[in-house]
Image (cartoon, rainbow, N blue to C red; front, side):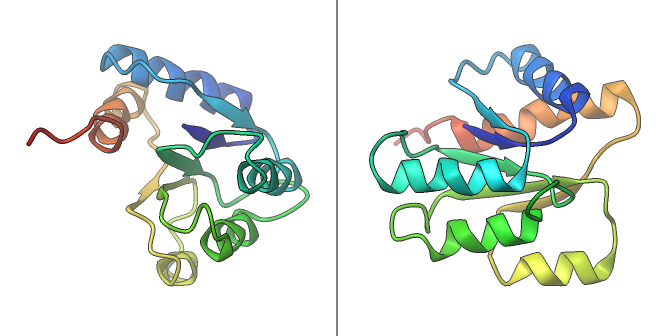
Length: 132
């Protein structure tokens, strides 16, 4: 999993939500849009593995989440990766802007701890292989 999130507290909450839903996976976390673009370049170059899931915040320093999302979808290697947008924005314009990049889900960051922990089930859905 590639987690693109600048808020260290939210990173910890996402990791805890995954643990609570018994999700075992390798997580690469990057804290800004520029680092995310470099990480995607490394995936394209075979230095980093292709993630099964990308969780991305829209409000990132250095490059916006929308720019990173575009980079992922324009990539020859990463174009089909599953993406979940997890952001504080509930702005309709933001939703429309990311919709063209076909994320699997657009989730507004929860306010309560219990709501945040429930996100683990949503992430698990995209990380667990489907049974035949």
